[in-house]
Length: 269
Ligand SMILES: C[S@@+](CC[C@H](N)C(=O)[O-])C[C@H]1O[C@@H](n2cnc3c(N)ncnc32)[C@H](O)[C@@H]1O
Image 1: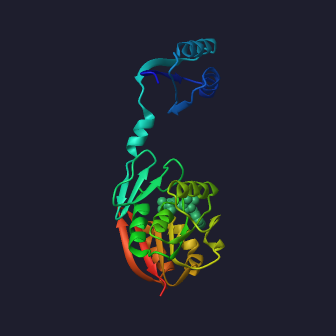
Image 2 (image 1 turned 120 degrees about the horizontal axis):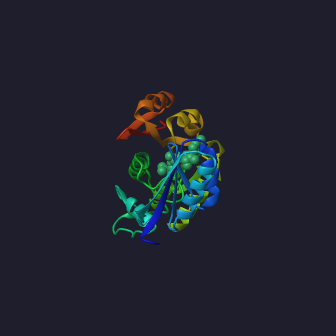
């Protein structure tokens, strides 16, 4: 990586699209569009590109401001890595692939590039807390909307037998990869929602969004065993009442609030 890169800014007074097309054909780099200004960045000198654009503007008698500045190259990969720190929730220690596990913790390694669920979001950490407090060894658990698989990996590490599902096939694949990274095992995995569950579970966790929780409420309830636990998350405080109304036939036994996000824990009594 070079210490510096070049930034070319182009602001045509007219025919913006023509200049965009020309710039696209003159450089292989991605082009940013910012309020009528085209920006191209490259470690190669962009003077020839600027020259071409100016010649084009002159031919069309269009005013076009251009400038090239030298910018310091940042180490974006390391910057990104530094921005993703391990997360500790109760007994769980969730860390990205480039960090080390921690002693005396239940370690969960997650590749954060794969899918939603690195442990940083309030909803995920609240679900981890709820799993830590409600899941026992040998219990069955279904993770609805598994994303990275973080929640079911945590439950499996507590000794639960876990099934996972997500409507997004890529999420199911990424969860499988994260299970492998953790040497953890799942029982069943499918692309789709709770409707495809073939059994009932001691614990069902669904960190989705309030509207979807309401939409799939009856299937979620059906998937929980009598006396089982249902953990619902992804609920913004302002939508909490909608979810509570739909699940009012279950007993709300706990509520975890982190910032504006709420997690509700129900017992099917
Ligand atoms: C907020 S992420 C949660 C990921 C992870 N479980 C966590 O707690 O960090 C929600 C996931 O639910 C999935 N999803 C959305 N609607 C769904 C549905 N009806 N059934 C199952 N999964 C769904 C999305 O594809 C996404 O992966």
